[in-house]
Image 1: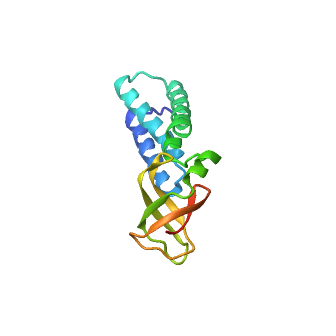
Image 2: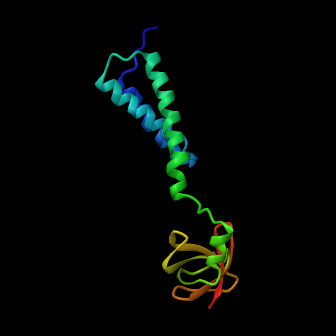
Image 3: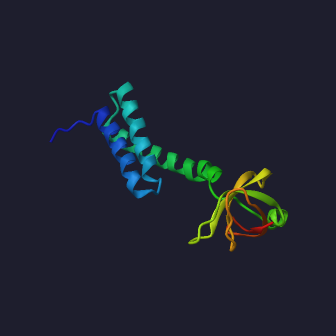
Length: 151
């Protein structure tokens, strides 16, 4: 059986893997797709790369891109790391509600006039009903979510 993989096979594989990510939402397969597209572009530029080298390069690029995502890029947009000192600074701060809480979850979003712990918008939980424009005061921090009360 004589089968040759050409550049567009890799690009199609990459796009397919990226499309599958829409349904999985783990943001892992996406990087395998990016690596496949890179291999497709390399094969387009240098058409004499053997299949074994293509597969090895794809595996290495997949691991590198996934590692870079989880190690360096994702933490920049992920959960805030709050230590006890930061939590103590947050308690008592007052912010304005920009998204009121609903009756089911009692969760909402608030904004501070100046960034606190690196961000000026935070999610909150309140046992009281609050609406957009209300001023709330932080009483506690749990799981990077602020517990607030009307001030």
